[in-house]
Length: 336
Image 1 (cartoon, rainbow, N blue to C red):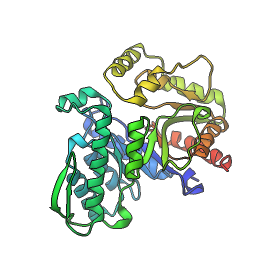
Image 2 (cartoon, rainbow, N blue to C red):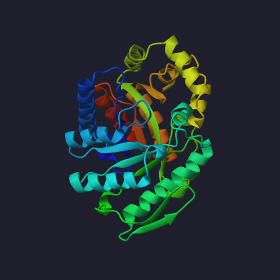
Image 3 (cartoon, one colour):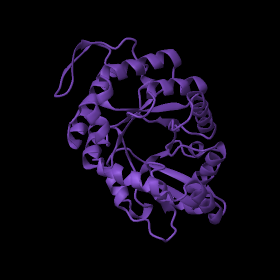
């Protein structure tokens, strides 16, 4: 039984693997496999990254839709890459052709080198102002049966109508990074789910009336704590080259969450909250490692604090998703 089948209010997403050094056909096969594993183990959707080093997320999402029955792509959307009309048109067209809902993970952009290469020098907080206006245009185009005229600070449209229209039940779920004040304000302004890279569960404040919220974490759970840590250290060994790359990335990033995670010390004390994969530049999120009960206790605290969406790191195999599902099942028993 999946975690989401026990609590329909919980939205669980996995993550599409990055291309890495894989030959294109091998990567295509991996995307299809991960998508099918994710669907099989009860995930609502799957995050598809977007940056200057990735494949086009919309084409990858097309593969995911054609390879699964219900899994919803969570497409990372960077405003600098395309006009909001193009996003709205793609959502409407996908809905018409496949009847599949797509989620949007709105990205303001944390790595300045990517943006500089595209001649975008917009400051960090102003990028969130642009993002909020961007989503407003998408919403208007998808919700309005009539032509839309809008004149904002960043975008303008004049008597623009969305054809074909998007069925209301396929309207996209919208996520925004909520780790910075600007990101959280943008999420509230557009009614989006604010996603953050969390601190240890005991440090997370309880949310109250702040809108929908979620977290992004990796999970390695086993029946026995020692077995989980054995898997964790084998999958993410110490890597000095990776540590240096992370340090360099921190210097060229103006992302608040990136700087916060980079500044945290990973003490010698073994707690479920583990930053070594992030510090070694093997992943972009913290991990929870331990027995089912230990990981479940951490997850239950996050859920009780008000985070009802969880985006997992990309799974290496279907067995890992089975263990993760077991940890979530135990966590649900501790949520009141």
